[in-house]
Length: 255
Ligand SMILES: C[S@@+](CC[C@H](N)C(=O)[O-])C[C@H]1O[C@@H](n2cnc3c(N)ncnc32)[C@H](O)[C@@H]1O
Image 1 (cartoon, helix red, strand yellow):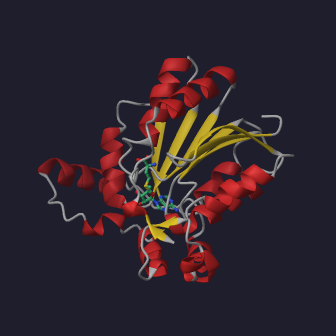
Image 2: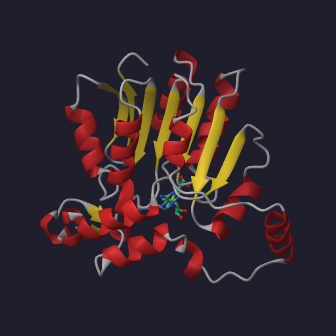
């Protein structure tokens, strides 16, 4: 695979191109989306804020909106950044089961033999399995090396006092309480488990109304998820996509 940092449009945050914004407007005006589950909040300033602004612009009834971030330091920042959107619930935890996710990373042919996929991007060409496991262990910010401000320290101590508990397998837990509500999934977490996350959503949401947004469809994260969505024309309709900016928006049958 080729290094994602060499890509002209490379960014940790999702693209804010005008076609993506138009597609979100269409999604919220044409369909009644009752729940949103986002995997991979990062700082909350990318896809989370884009979705929030599209909701504010196009709906009067705000969906339940859960966004999941595994890295505690990044989660704390996101909580601050997302305060202005009271309908968003940031969660600190892992979208999937930790042991299963690690096994997926350690056995995935596309990670172990990434050189056999020359057209696909990857974040790390040197020992990617180890780096992706570090990320799902919540250590993405480890190398950011930022000094904690007084405000950050206070927030950290306050959230500790309020006992923010780490959860894993959040997708499964949420799926059990959806009760037929039309749900939008935005999948943008670690590159090494993007496909595992997609397969998890497809399994949990079989015959249930949902939409899927994938980021990084030309990357290890979702090149196979995008292939599966595109091939499964009995179940999924692609509403819009941008190969250049790496995203796709799809609708499950009867949603
Ligand atoms: C590509 S960034 C997300 C970017 C964000 N969607 C945006 O547009 O700004 C991926 C984030 O997902 C987090 N992450 C990785 N794997 C995760 C998982 N399985 N569950 C929850 N968060 C995860 C990482 O710590 C990182 O902050």
